[in-house]
Image (cartoon, rainbow, N blue to C red; front, side, top):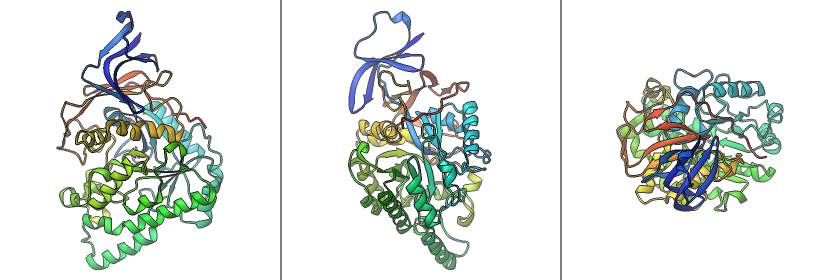
Length: 444
């Protein structure tokens, strides 16, 4: 039977209107101000008082499978994702084993086909010696090539200059970079060890993984992309200085694009004294000045995409001393609520939230029939009550790691329904855990 979402406020492609959405199997078949004649032909959801947006596409997550499933796995984190209105994700290669061969990439697809509630794609990881594997990528099935131009969880640092040049010159698809200069980070860490020994504090993190380290590495990535004509997407920007590297052109006209994550828009270095290592990420959360510069760059289109870098660890892995604490945290269940909260604080228009979290990733990666509420597109749709408060608590956190940096915070909005490929997967706190999403495909 067809489904009808009626009388709902629809936010799509800059428009904001009351309308009705008809879903037939996996696809949207009608978006109209008129109701169909015979409502008995439909399963009806009355969307009165609710807002409909396309499903969020998160272009950077770490779901930790295979090899690190004590802290997260594809099932648990995709479940949290759909509860947060994220209907599609792109997952990173620094698992165990790392996704640096076509064989390991295929294994991840098999895992996701059996476990993921959301739609999925996986980055292929570049190393100092796997360029021939990179060249074998099927560009219709792989979202991008991930290059760690600074060390992070999993130690996939690409630091050979000739290799970097070859990747930028010969990658058949978009290159996504983690950009922090390792030599600067190690020099800073050495100084802090000399001064503090084993007593380095969490608030020293943005001084060790400094703005200078970020800028130098991001500038290097941009320089290589400009030299070789690469399609480059710089992930999780964190500093005001880096904004000078990017343009404000429409995303369709860019070869070099930039992403910002919700934690760099929400937190600043004052939170280290409140939450400690719970707000420790790589790149680090930095100053309030940096945060404001990032937000302004988002509004003026220097920053193209909002994502999470969802990277869960167990609390016991986070709450060690600085030298033994893991960087990263769980975010995918609450990222949309964070951005909607900023909208409700009159900081950003809701159409811009939808552009940066739904439309822009679809355009950037050339995703087939997703990211919009349009006839003929897959019915990835989220319904939101912008007037219903939602408090993050241990009882409603769905991450396998069981915690959130937003625990105890009351958002002004609640995600009520999430449709994935026309299937109602999440409704008012309940998840249909039997459904499995689809592999994303790319029009390239």
